[in-house]
Image: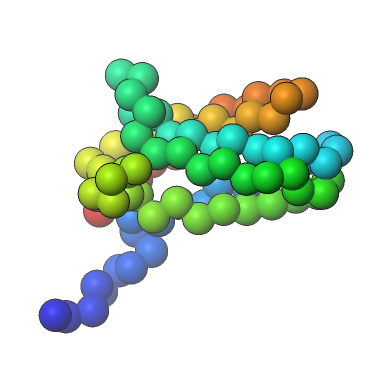
Length: 87
């Protein structure tokens, strides 16, 4: 196989800040509200974090190009950011 000439195009970076130590649940939703991917992290210390999402769903299949909503939630807060995946 040939290497992908643009390996970063289908990976998006999710950034979030924890004001205090907490467990984090990160989920990706497509525009119609389907949960396509999820990642749960046990308690992390306060600070800034970033996480790579490679555009694969929970079954390991590539999701379609388009707009996705990324939800980062802890027991104290929930933040949603919009990302665009391009393949």
